[in-house]
Length: 56
Image (cartoon, rainbow, N blue to C red):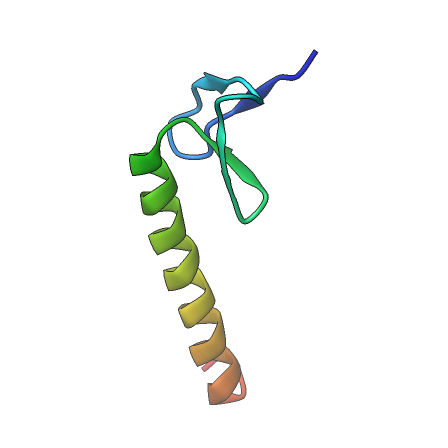
């Protein structure tokens, strides 16, 4: 049985109706868009941190 949950709200999603972004399952297009924005922000923060050359 396939049991996955929306990364944003935690609701159970079905494989045939779930939306998948960056390997994560989401319950709606709205949550998919929100997840993409969060993931892009996280990646931008990581790249900024890498450019500074340290933790400070």
